[in-house]
Image (cartoon, rainbow, N blue to C red; front, side, top):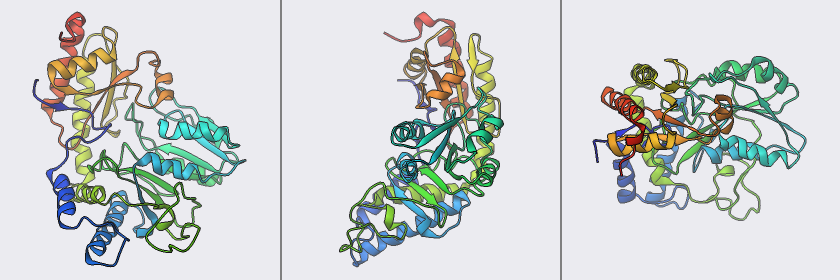
Length: 385
């Protein structure tokens, strides 16, 4: 196989700082206990680690650091489902064309259970239609918005959108799956923030979080043991216990803590500046290849994602050839965002997404461009036998 050039960070940070794996191994070797399950020193050490990680995550995201407002779970999808599942029949949910299936599929289910679902239109650049947003917010209860499109990398003005929603009387849920750890988001005025740990935050798979503004309504998605109040039939009223039924993924949280520590040392803003330069290099390089159409806008403020199609080679074949012949790992398909591909006119074919991360280099970018150019120039030779 050729040298490894990983450009699929929007799916997961398969490459992580070594401190992350070390933290997981250290926790399993030196502690290994479940937080909140006992008063012995191992359980207490695990509890302290989780407490510190709650605060560190809120601090990194620029949110209020009251630890109880950060609830851990398996991923951002669980966080989103928890918030959407707190709506009642007759209430109004507003989603957007740019949302991930983590929002759209629960919304589809809720539409059949008495929730009115409205969708805000967007354009192929990843910009929401202001008039459509204003109409949808009239009488709405909850707006979901992703901080950046996972297909285009387009960054949304979350603070401005949240202000519009709050003025209309709607609460706001922000999906930060493509920005947490990559960008400094303006989360002023939001009510819920869904977080995944395994992308820009550099943690392992299987850990995510939900930040909840104090007083914002929320119901448990899961019910079960919390380590305390065991005689009560109902889930505890106080956060985070109210939403953390079952055993927390403490090794994953330890790895997430190490990822956050690394990001705090390096600085999220500094990482974004470096990746913005690489993103433009990748965008312009792909745009210069004959027959390639770059779908992502040329925006240095966006998430480090560049998505493209070729009129000479199917996206699946292009991604396969990049991997097998050039060592460039990307993701082809529809990226769990069907409405975005409808806007782009790529519903039939999908597209190839190149996404950068903490350790991406000019060599990775240049190899990707080289590979696309070679494969699309001679499509009949694109995939090795």
